Length: 334
Ligand SMILES: NC(=O)c1ccc[n+]([C@@H]2O[C@H](COP(=O)([O-])OP(=O)(O)OC[C@H]3O[C@@H](n4cnc5c(N)ncnc54)[C@H](OP(=O)(O)O)[C@@H]3O)[C@@H](O)[C@H]2O)c1
Image (cartoon, protein in one colour):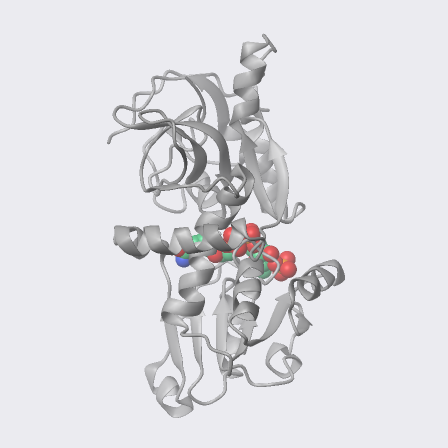
């Protein structure tokens, strides 16, 4: 099978399109794979450094080979940027949900759902602030918070994104670049979902209403925060953290919440924004676009197209780096 593997840690040019053995055991013939922030950090060697060479990619949709069912899968250990991926943490995709929507709703939607509901306990009385509201998680959180009956305020950094969020049902939007974010909110949130961290986290946390809580699920700004417990006691507010792997630890929770998200997506009540589509040979370009924040929405690797190209004899180019040669990659550990 073909895979886009990294043979070194570094920039988007470290990918090479490579012929490697299929993973052992139950597998998925991949149709689309997702490109995520976590993949970028792993590519740089800054987060859960994989042993090299490695195939990154943590979410896929395709056909499970053993029964032909259309499934979505989450692969915390990677393996998604390939024609064939290990069948880990699979969930059935209903007919009413496209491959693209299933991919864009699964990881980001689970993060939004469990941050908002499982940890945040959102209700109709809440004023919910969503930072990074136009991002992959954030724009789904805006829709889910609105569906819960809450008042929703979205933070984003451009007028176009503000219009996008208003179209999704946000009651108000705030420029994420404002130096006085707390005051700019105009009202005290009872619940904040934060995917940015750093200054954003500090300022929106300080703006919380008494008894309010903030759920930190991400750090797009790459600045870590520490929290002083005595400050929490004085303000009478709470800080919670979300990590998707704790959902994956609980198969029943994972399957039931994924099925709920797919149900909403199938009925058109939850719609993910799709950004760019790239062939497997251009994973590096997708990474560059994600890092530059040029292309809003979920970035997809169209693996199926590669398969069609191969069937029709279209030449398969390697990635942009001429310094990286295709290598033979050992099958990944199971
Ligand atoms: N806890 C978990 O299990 C889990 C699961 C999924 C994702 N995450 C994390 O959650 C965060 C958001 O994920 P996502 O999928 O929503 O990402 P995304 O689609 O790339 O969106 C990130 C958003 O963050 C905002 N942002 C603010 N400062 C930024 C900066 N310095 N660099 C890049 N973006 C910045 C951007 O909005 P503006 O340009 O409008 O400011 C952008 O819309 C990431 O850190 C990701 O790793 C965690």
